[in-house]
Image (cartoon, rainbow, N blue to C red; front, side, top):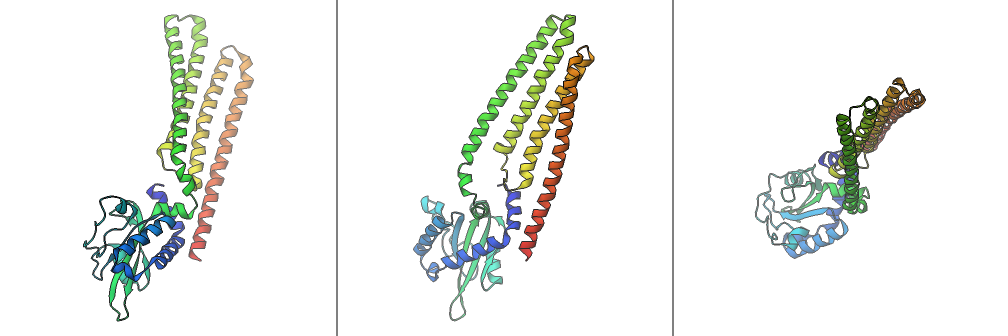
Length: 317
């Protein structure tokens, strides 16, 4: 997911995400975290097995200075273990949130300084029996992965590289066909220039236009596939994403059919009346596709507005 999709999904599922963060923090908390780093490490390993979106865990003192190093799966497996200890975090949103709340405070999304991903943090201030602040436990999660976990999208994401590879191969094949069509059109143009006979001037331009039109349509199809399925991080749960893809595909088909219908119309005017019926039929088909596409886009947009309204009502209830 891109950052915009992540933020939109976060707004849709803000309450469940905050509740999940609070429950993870409450279940993982241990007083020994503030005195024993090994306990933090064991807890982090358990969290990563059960909640793969958990990114980072560490403790602060009452003034916001980091007591423990950054505990993460990455830091445990390389030479970065031990980093972060002693750094002043008093200006960070999780420390401010913890001081404002007696319970578990959950921040709004922000960019993590350690992973540079969009994340949210849960912070719990631990107070002893004498009322003194022993420390603050902070837990960071990767927001994008958390949303995928909540929506059951983890398995699909594992196959994403395979899907991208297949789409890339298909696009390469389409561009190869485009090259063949352009080569054929070029040959026809060269032949027409070398032998500009009257019969050739009347018939060959239509063949050249057909080659070029097919090349344009296939190239646009390959370009759309490349942009939508390979280059862009498309959110498949968004109806607008699917609607945009279908609209672009249908627009490509409409352009190709309309140009072919015009060619048949020109042929019928130039002395081949047998093509007139086919030309009218193709024009009617393109008009029907255009009307159907308009209805689909209109109804899809209205349905998405209704779905967003229902989700907003549920979130505020």
